Amino acid sequence: MTVNFNNREPVYVQIIRYFKEQIAKGVFEPGQEIPSRRELANWLKVNPNTVQRAYKEMENQGLIFTEGNLPSRVTRDEKILRSVREELIMEAVHAFVSTVRSINVPVEEAVALVREFYGKTGEKEGDRNDRSEKY
Image (cartoon, rainbow, N blue to C red; front, top):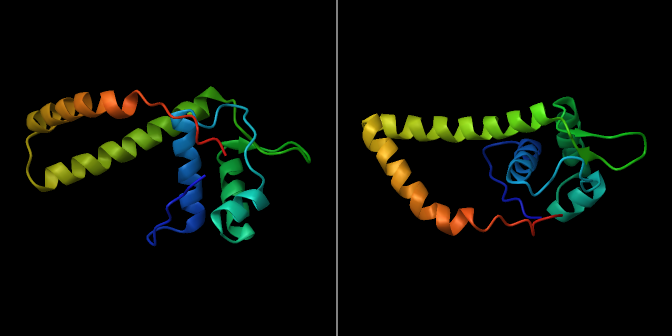
């Protein structure tokens, strides 16, 4: 498990984003057990309290659940899982649109470039639905 931390966002927010991305990609599946707070803190070399904060926030969002003393698991709630995917897509679209709009690219040109690029990269990246990143 590798998370490349940046200095712009708090580490716990980046951990949450990582989990959302892995869920959206299908690396973490509905109902799948996730690493314990201590295991993840150890692997990421971060303070256990940071991981605890990320897990608590993910539980509040309904992204993961913990029953009693059992390990935490990814939600099975399809509505939440769809909303995670939609959230990530909308973030990417917003960033892209903001960037191309700032340099005055007409929407038709932007869409054409996206189609062209998506077709080229889809064969390379889309075909390797890598599920080997399981924790």
